[in-house]
Image (cartoon, rainbow, N blue to C red; front, side):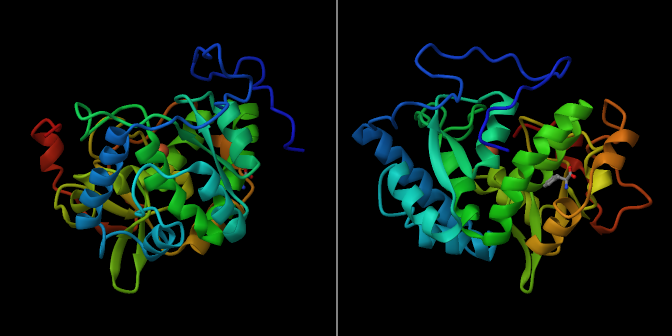
Amino acid sequence: DFSALPDPGEGVFTAPLKRPAHVGEDWLEPAQTDYSAEDDKIWDELFARQMEILPGRACTAFMQGLDKLDLGRGGVPDFGRLSEELGRQTGWSVVPVPMLIPDHVFFWHLANRRFPAGNFIRTRETFDYIQEPDVFHDVFGHVPMLTDPVFADYMQAYGRAGWKAMRYNRLKALGALYWYTVEFGLIREADGLRIYGAGILSGPREAVFALEGESPNRIMLAVDRVMRTDYVIDDLQPTYFVIESFEDLYHQTVERDFDQLYRNLGPGFTYANAAVLDIDNLLHRGTQEYHLRGGRG
Ligand code: PHE
Ligand code: FE
């Protein structure tokens, strides 16, 4: 039953976030912000910049999702309108939250096919990079993918999977899976590698680096391997993992029982984020020159 907000459970480590006074236990904003003309302009400029880069690099599902949801009609999209359209397509909705929300609340929304999206939009000072996910990252990066029926089911199953990971106290490992799929995933399409990860799709630099760069490793995704792999939070990734199709991802995760896996996992990560292993199905061995130079730039 996913109607009730779960209890993270005794001894489970989740980030200690302070809930703003105006939101309840569900962390939902009573309404989406009234965006200013400048906010809408920032959305339009971010949108136009990504559209210079993404055709031929973003996966087909993403490009079709942008279209189906008409995300380029101008200004920050209205979550009500998006939810109606998404509801028709895959039964998902988009709901406004003030900031990053606690893991167990995030899982609960996903399990109920609600995508919590940051309400605020970045400013000109933080145009190129912000640490906290804003409405551009969340809506432009994540929401188009929710029009794909298989990916939409994966996201819901991921929410449910959070419960089990919390029981085993292995959220860190499940978080790595999210990171290397939902945020930084690549997919093999008939015409070549494409991006489906929102963290890449919503930024100006990483699309070219991830797909065409010599620096990063590109490795076929294997769940046991990925869930043991450390990742970089605030810079380009040393390694990207590639799926064959969304059915491949679904098969490896949703259709597999993770109990055994959690029992065999240690509490920390086993593999460094730049490592290439004997067991890897390697598409490209990265030079890592970007990170060897010190990263960030
Ligand atoms: N099938 C996994 C389990 O048994 C759940 C899962 C679904 C994990 C989707 C990740 C993504 O726990
Ligand atoms: Fe994200």
